[in-house]
Picture 1 (cartoon, one colour):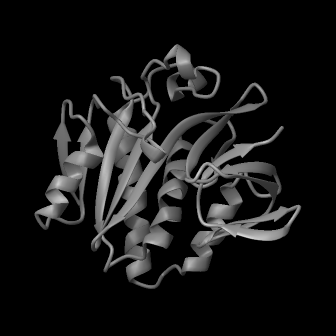
Picture 2: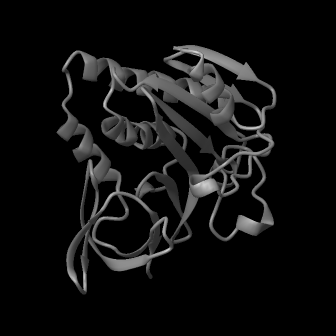
Length: 237
């Protein structure tokens, strides 16, 4: 997969979109720093130097976006397990979490978009970057977790190799969709938890998570069983 490396950009997702609109597919945009990084629903993603910020563009006619949405966090978790022995997990739908002093903190996140035949997958991982005071209660860097600086390029290369291995296995039918789903569930820290799901219309649905599949999260609520495709997930203590 071609890698385009930039020292600084407004947003790797936006830069990648421009190239994708011109017909470019199956490439990665990697930046040392983003000036206007975005999280889900337009939220700010602080992208200070030292973190790992990149966007993958895939042809959605070649790969099923629902499967890629699971492969991406799985590949991140499996990569980071080589750098820390702390417990790592995925908070629905795709937050990368690490357990520190009994509590989970956010180590990374994914912003995926499906646009006219291609898929944009933006990834941010807190590696050596300082965590701003506004989010220190909920976020942490890998450097803080392990107590030393980590080679960002090594993590990126490890991730990309693992991710591309999954893509190759999919194409060659060496792994099926439900094996991938099983892996995702293995790393999920949301299944079995009581959660609040914030929807894009600001509605909040509370319930216990019974399952997660390719189409979303299965919640047991006061009204019965509900399936929710996506939303901001808050674990209730």
